[in-house]
Image (cartoon, rainbow, N blue to C red; front, side, top):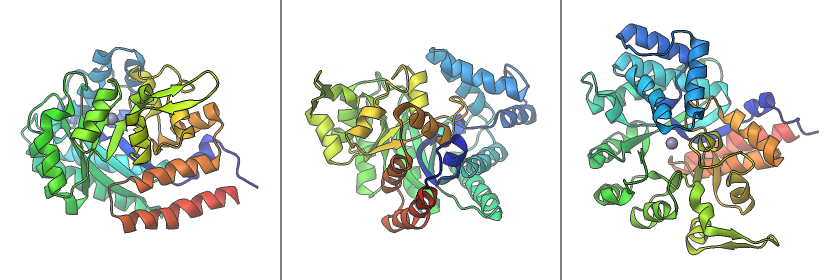
Length: 362
Ligand SMILES: [Zn+2]
């Protein structure tokens, strides 16, 4: 007898998360306490429940300006080492409590230099936080592995400096690189030297592409820059034609993405908030999963979207009628697509993921 699917049982299933922003996943109470400790002014309230709702409402408002205001507050309270350690440690605890067994958590170090921290101090503080959080999780008898992605911001200069940082810290928990920030007007080809450097270093990278902006952004990320994965990649559907009789025709780029098994880091709730889709039912993830693209499910910003990986899975189950086999498929897709070594990926699939789902469907 298969275990019935519910938010609770989904939480107990082993899950893998590839796209989660450190500065988008703080606990509201932590934002308040860190603001108090650092003298940060400007939070709209000091009530954790109200503040959580404020972040969610701002993200839901349809206004990018208001959405970004939320990050001004989270980044505003993450400007010293103690704060970074705490936020990183709590992220690990929260992910483990949600049943995540492997997560790649990303952030842009340059967002935390306002009070004079060096980029190296920032990376080391976050790694310390991940170590502390992982130890706390281990003490409860659970297991979680965290890989770090360092982001450069599209609108800023200095991508190469961040890529060098990712390479320098790759044996200390940093597993890859990404570029984040506004897609329109800032194509990834602005930094071809950065991607060439990463490839020459045999380093891994993903690129936020095809979220707000269309196919050219995806095409550049893959064919000019050499991205191994696509952050979101939602707009790849613009290259897929579904006829009235149900016949599906892939354009050259969509076919390339599917043929090469290029992973799509899809974040359903976040995409609704940024306008990439209007409802989960209309979200391209349904079609892309049906067509067997390498689809993965992710949270993006757990605080702003008021979500967890389990709640994202539950929403997909409710909308598309997915069962445990589908959730295992998303999970194995994600683990196969991670930036850690092949042997480690295989071990997590065989020792944690498959036995976990087998137990739920036994
Ligand atoms: Zn993102």
